[in-house]
Image 1 (cartoon, rainbow, N blue to C red):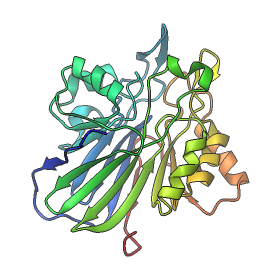
Image 2 (cartoon, one colour):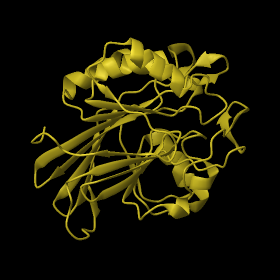
Image 3 (cartoon, rainbow, N blue to C red):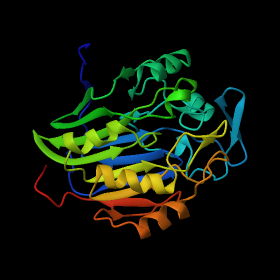
Image 4 (cartoon, rainbow, N blue to C red):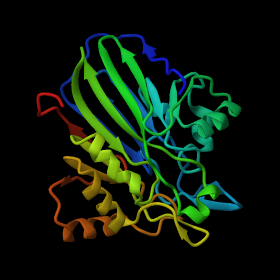
Length: 284
């Protein structure tokens, strides 16, 4: 396993460890701010009605306008990219984002981004962790297992990782946030709560994406099953309704969650909504 060099960011003023925010831009694109870090996930900014390729001659149409454009974003410290696919890193992101911004992703995605001119690429494989430091604050980005398709067709889709974002300051653990990435239910998901029994917040990619007649992301019922498996304190579904290949809307997830016996608190965001979180425990 290759040695992973920490990403060192310039410290800027005091680090606030009070309230953090998840701003839902649309699809799997969120802006997460906490402990002095500002990071963007899976940047996709195509306008409603535009098309993006998904490979194998398949295109999908954007159905919902993203809540903002790249030029509306605050200065970013980092991008966390689950995989290289047209609805997760699109032509607008490729054209308008800073080519020198640090991007943490998997090896295949890094190869594609390098061809687009991005230069600050950091690759991690499942269970590998990339430290990001800013003064005495640290963000640890660890790749979580994800499986984008059934075994018989998994090679037709780009490899994907989930991510665990762990925020700390001065060695004190503050907050743990899990993002599924595009995945189906699979055996390795059960290892996540064994390794991380205390997850504060989870963002679950749902939508029931269908490609070539095959389900390649969780539908609403499976998304709720994943919530049960990983068991965060709060869960937020994302990655729904935004593209024409999605066949399972937010209402499917809500209906399944209503029927399920969950101890996780569910929170729902529409594009442009913000969820605020705070550290209510004395660390993990």
